[in-house]
Amino acid sequence: MLRRRTTRTTAMADATARAGVADRTGVADRTGEKDRAERMDRTRWRAGRGQETGRTRRPRALAAAALAVAGALVLSGTCTSTAQDRGTAAPAGEHRGLSGTAPCPGVAGFSCATLTVPLDHSGRVAGTLGLKVALADNARAPKGVLLFLTGGPGQPGVPLVDRLRKKLAPLLTDYRLVMIDQRGTGGGALQCPQLQKEMGSSDLTPPTERAVTDCAAAIGPNRRFYGTGDTVADLDLLRRALRVRKMTLDGVSYGTYTAERYALAHPHHVARLVLDSVVPQTGYDPMDRAALRAAPRVLTAACAAIGCRTDPAADLAEVVRTYHNGVDVLDALTTWEFVDPDYAAMIDALHTAAGGDPGPLRGLIAGVREGSAATAEELSQGLHASTLCLDGRYPWGRADAPVAGRQEALREAGAELTPADYGPFDAATATGLGTMLSCLYWPRTLVPPLPSRHRRLPGVPVLLLGGDRDLSTPLEWLYDQRKLTPRARVVVVPGAAHSVQSRAVSDMGRQAVFDFLLDR
Image (tube, rainbow, N blue to C red):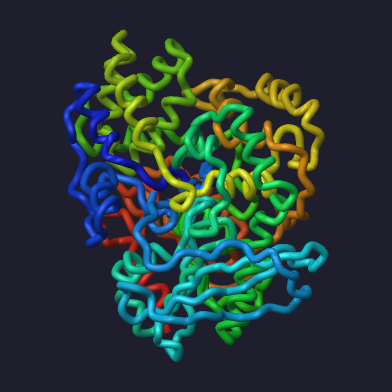
C-alpha cells in the first residue's frame, strides 16, 4: 500500500547501463544522508520515488514504501526499536509511558525514548512491546506535536528523523517533531528471512507460497496484533505519554492510511492532517486497478515532458499483450518513478520491446529486482504481510476466510475483469501482484473490524498532496479520499512522483505544507 519501494542499491543504475539505455535521470535530491542513503540518492532516487514513505503496497505497499519519508528508505540510525518484552501485558487502557529518555546519537535537539505498549490492547494476551520514539526537545512548541508517520507498512520512523528535520525545518520552531518506530519495524522488526529475500523492498514482486507460510508460522498467532488498528492504539498511548490533547499528523503513503485511521478512531485528538501520496481510508485495492489504469496517463505526460516521439501508452499495451509480463512491467514502472519521474529509460525500453526487441526492458526489470534488496530493519516484509492481510479486503473476503476456496475466488474475480478495470495490462496482472499472493497464502487469522467505508474524516483541516507522476499511490486514490474529507485542500505537483515532501524537485508541495501548517 503503500509503499512501495523503500530501499534500493546501485544495481538499479547498473540496470540502465546493461539495458543499453541512456541515463537521463534528473538532479539528485541530496539531503546529506550518508553511506547507503547517499548512494541511493545519487543513483536512483532523485529522479524518483520518494518519500514514501513512499507503498506500503500497495506498498501497493502495500511498501510503500523508498525513503521519502514515508516510503522511502531507511537507514542509518539514531535509535532502534527494542525487542518485545514477553512479560505481563499492561491492562487495557493503561500504559507505562516513555522511558529511557536520552539524547539521540548524532541528532542535535532530539531525544530518543521507548514507549511501552501492550502487545494486545484488549489485555487478553500477555506481553508488551517497546517502540522507539524520537522527540524534538522543544516540548513547549506553540503549535504542539507534529507526528510524522512513515510508510510501507514496514518502515521505521526514528532512523529518518535527521532527514525529516531538515526537510521540515521551517516548521520546527512552531511544532515539536515526533517520530516513532511502529510495532514490528526497526530494531523490533518482524523477521521473515525468505520472504524478505524474495520481496526485498517491493510489494508487487510475487513471493513463493512457502516463503509466505514460513513467515506466518515464524510470527505465530501473535500476527493478529500487527494491524493498523493496533498501531493506532499505540499512537494514542504516545499522545497520552506526551501529555497533549491534540496532535497534527503528517503521513506519507501507508502513513496517510494510518493517519486517517487515527483520525477516525480519535477525532477529538487531531488538530490537522497532511496526507502526502494518499492511500484512501477505504483501503488499498490488491488488484491495483487504479495504478493499472493510470499508467497510460502518467507515461504520456512524462513523454511530453521529455519531448519523446513515441506513444508509450500504446507501447505498454503491446508489450503486455506480446510478452505477458504485466506484473514485472508494473513492478519496474512503480520503482522507476523513484529513479526518474520522467520515466525516460522505461519509455525507451518499452518502445524497443514493442518493436520486437525485449532485451533492454528485460535488463531494466532484472536491475529492479536485483536492486530491491532490503533488510527487515529497513522495511519488514513480515510486518508488511501481517498488516496488509489483516487490513485488506480480497476476492475471498478477509484473512479469517478459509484458505481452501481462496484460489477459486481469485480465479472467478479475475474472470470478471474487463479492460475497463486494468487498462493496458491484463487480468493476469491484476490477480498476480505480490501483495495479493502474499495474502492468498497467508494462514487463516482472526481479523479486527474495519471502519465503515462511508465514514467521513472529522471536520479538521486536511491537506491532500500528490504528484501527477505517481503510480505507487496514483492521484485517483487522492480524489477518492477527497470525497470523504469535509475540509480538504488539494495540491497536485506537476512532474512529481511519490513522496512529494521528500522527493519532489519542485518546492511547490513543501511550500504548500508549510503554508497549511503555519496558517493561523
